Length: 269
Figure 1 (spheres, one colour):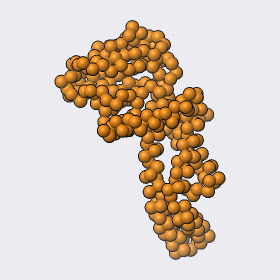
Figure 2 (cartoon, helix red, strand yellow; figure 1 turned 60 degrees about the vertical axis):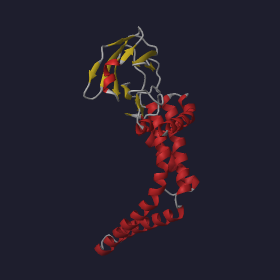
Figure 3 (cartoon, helix red, strand yellow; figure 1 turned 90 degrees about the vertical axis):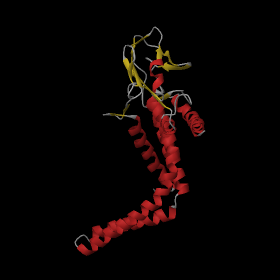
Figure 4 (tube, one colour; figure 1 turned 120 degrees about the vertical axis):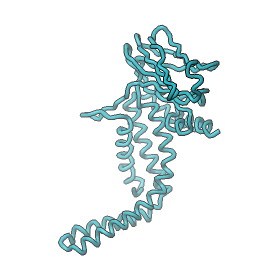
């Protein structure tokens, strides 16, 4: 029941993110980062005690100024640093509750963005490793992977001790390909993205509740399967002189947008 509910919630988050995925990857991720930063800041302002936070911050600044002005007086400096430590602890206690409230929507959003922007489709004439972990070791030798003519699949490598099966897939031409995993009487079709420039490739699927929270793509259940992973290449995003993964990109621009907007919304952070 919990896993199905989480699947429905993930579908709602995916629907909200979907319009941004129609944009070019770099711009879409930037737009989501800015909107998310502003939205999370607004929520933080509503659930936090803004008056107390402003008061504590003013005390921290005053103690810092005191330690600078009386830096030649050891006792006054130590006293000011003690007050900074005290009010820093007060600030932490005031901020921890709003941060915990923000954790739930943040995890759901980050999980969806990981599906959308962490990986990219395979290049034509490239290789990928497919890994499947089963919940039932007795089905290990019943697992099959069927692929169309455009893909070359090596024989499976089965590891009974860990209940895992591995395949190596070699692509020969661009174009998305439909592969089919078969276990006993169950079939699990999955699209392998090749040369499409697509980001939302669903590289990981897990059956556990925590797995569905972190990797929301894919069906609600796959009998006998604990996890399925396809090692698509990582997608990097340019910041001028260097490239970073999607999470660093998101954190930079969401925090910047939150800091800028906080001045206009009057939210103390």
